[in-house]
Image (tube, rainbow, N blue to C red; front, side):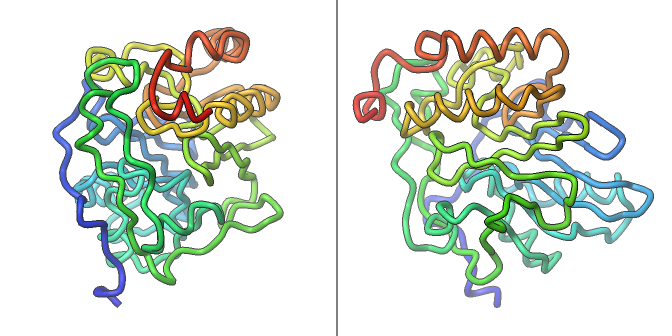
Length: 283
């Protein structure tokens, strides 16, 4: 089994971090957000029943940290029922091989992400020429090759349901990647947004390090379809979320969320879309 699943040849540790790294935030009694360097993972489930799901798997070489957070929250030798991926970029699947080997649990992703998770296709290269700050310039170092999870990864149900999370539904939010999804719970308006939009200016090294709050579009250097990204943000605003847990940046709620998301939708081209870059031209 082990030899049949593997990372791409460009898989490597990325020395980028923020003041939030290592911090856990209990967003709700059944949702824990934990920051791995510059990206968030979510653990969704009731600590009393120990039934939970992991959403995304952080940065490369972070498996031990994730296992530690899980066991601290749910107990020694705890494991999730499944891993749900918002998408397959390196900073969201960075520990997945080690976690699948340890826990032997299924992974679920959108059908359009499957080629990138089964060794068939690599993502478009990150655009280091895109308008933005130092993180954008550094993005040429970021892995983009396909990983291979073999038959450990399955397609999410077409009806929008989320395995082992009966109160959530998945929403297709492409643009940042073809099969990007977000997770939404209607009963309380919780949105796990992935990278459909974020709450930090992700291309700026200073803002990434300081985690300065700023509702913004998806990370510029990896977003390949800005028209689709715009429609995805509009779709998520229509849900009227009460709490958002982004893939990058701090969770947000209340007036900061409602006004910030409205402004992002209204001024998407000015706020989110870079003035230049190869994927801007393609869009």
